[in-house]
Amino acid sequence: MEEWTAVHHGVYPAYISWEQFLANKQRLHQNGYRLAENTRGAPRKGPALLAGLVLCGHCGRRMGVVYGGSKGKGGYVCTALPSTHGARSCLYAPRVNTDEAVVEAVVEAIRPSELDLLEETLKTQSADRERLLVHHRDNVKAATYEARLAEKRYRSVDPENRLVAGELEKGWESALRTLAEAEEAAERFERERPQVELDPTLRTQLSDLGRHLPELWDGG
Image (cartoon, rainbow, N blue to C red; front, side, top):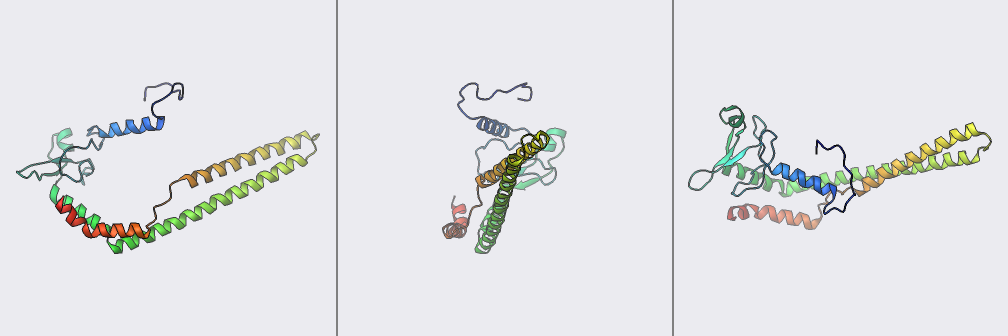
């Protein structure tokens, strides 16, 4: 695509949208194992919980998964330096210990105390969103007033006074553009997906999951 000189959308019927094409292209790119670009890689078989997700704490590159021993426990290993410079691996983390630490962190995150904090955070975000929504609507009201005022000025001027009429017409057009931009910004903000609310049902589900997740994980 970097070598394309022009793109004409909508010339022929398409099986998928342009946005979906770009998303698919990005997904294919991420599925490829490109060490230099630090891509995630495609999902592979194996019990590793964090395959393709762990980053090396030393060089920042994505770590791979190796399995060893009769039980195939293995671990996460950084192969960036051995692959590019022939050096030793800069970091190795046992898979079982790392996975267990992540599971414990997830369980801790959905404990009642953490859910209280999450609920307060979501309420704050919701209040912030409401304030921004009021701000956008106030902008539309102000721009509407200015556009009507500019129109009134233009229509009340003597048509024979072309110089003044021309300036007032430009002012009206500018006010209309400002109004259109304010309306577009307000509509775009309202279309954005609102934050998820932690309603009683969801809270109960998360609490139940937090109590049973360790045994479910061990049993899986």
